[in-house]
Every structure is written in structure tokens, then in C-alpha cells.
Length: 267
Image 1 (cartoon, rainbow, N blue to C red):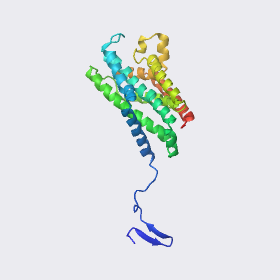
Image 2 (image 1 turned 180 degrees about the vertical axis):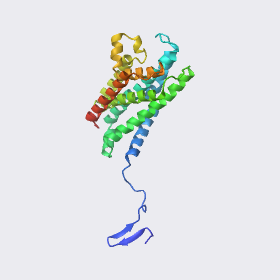
Image 3 (image 1 turned 90 degrees about the vertical axis):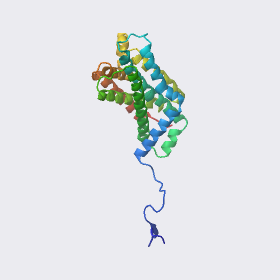
Image 4 (image 1 turned 90 degrees about the horizontal axis):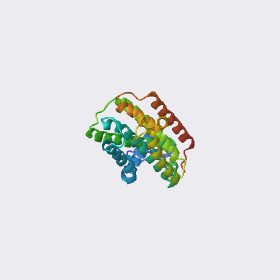
């Protein structure tokens, strides 16, 4: 008999840790972290995802600074960067995440996770963490390139963080609603069409103040438009985001996530 083994009336018992490994379900934090790491690997290995997340925003940044088709106040980089950051957030939180979620449902990835004991909140938490990490990386890269092009930061980082978090939450809620309810083919079409519409209406390339009045009014009510205007208030004008921008982003966040919680499907 070993030191770890004892004999009782019910038979031999063993001290904790005698047998390893000890299979048991991972904790919630470990599951969310694993899901986020999995999502990040998908982004880094997928050329289409990198195109959406980084190449197109960089092209928009250089194009906005050096192509003077649209009249912008000098220095142009201060007027261009808010729209580019909003474009990067839109690409990652809405289009990319909707497509990934839609095809995960189609190929049964979500069904397998559900069968393995994953809850809906653990899955959504992993996707949220992964999207936040990608957006943070985009901001660092785009901000570094903007600094090299002559950008001098204005405003409080707190307001930039608040507007970005609200914009990320609003767009991610809508992405999970689309990817969690529609077929994969329909998700692909809606995500790409929505990307184009939200860029055009939201003033990400042509600022809303340079658009017709009715278009500026409609665009300010979209999540991309409210995010862009909030970032523009901080980074171009050095002020806090307008209450209207924050209110619109909060409303889209509540509506998108409430609908996602209600109608999101694993299959």
C-alpha cells in the first residue's frame, strides 16, 4: 500500500492529487479566453479578415490625406482619422463578426460548443473579447501611422475610449443578431451590404457636415455615424462627444443585444 492509499470499510481511498490529470469542466474565464484566442487566430490566418480589419482602413487613411477630392480642413489627417477609426471598428465588430458567426452556425461549430457545455454568454463573451482585442490593435497601428503622417492628438483619451466601447458594443450586438439568426449566405450578403450602407450614411469617408442636411440627420442616427461623430468631436475638435452621439450609441447597444439575447440560435 502506498502512502497516498488508505483502506477503509468502504474500500481503498486515495489522497487528492494521486491521479493526474483530473478531467473536469474548465471555468468560465478559461472558456471565454479560449474562445477569444480561437477567434483571434481566425482573423490572423484569414486574408479576407485582414483585408477588412487593416488593409482597407489603411487605404482609407492614406487616400483621405493625399487624395483631395473631398474638401477638408487642414491638417487633413485630423479630419480623416476619426472616420478611419470608425471604419476599422465597423469592419471588425459588424461585418467580420457577423460573417464568422454565420458560418460557424452553418458548419456546426456552435452546435458542438453547445453540446460541450458552453453557455450562450460564454460564447458571446469570447467573441466580444476577441473583437475588443482586434479593435485595440487597429487603433494602435492606425494611430501610429497617423502620427507618422503628421497627426497631433487632441482631446481626452477617456472620451475616445468611451465612444469606442459604445460603438463596439452597438455594432457587435447587431453583428451577432445577423449572424445568429440568418442563413450563412444571407449573413454574408447582409454583412457586406450593411458595411457599405453604414459607411455611406455614417460619414466615414465624407464627413456628415459636408453632406446634405437630410443625409446628415439620418447618418447621425446610425451606429457608424454616431461613432464617427463622437470620435470627430474628440480627435478633430478636442471636445467631449455630443450627448446625442452617446445616446444614439447606447440605444443601438440596448436594441442590438436585447434582440441577440432573444433570437440568437446555435443552429
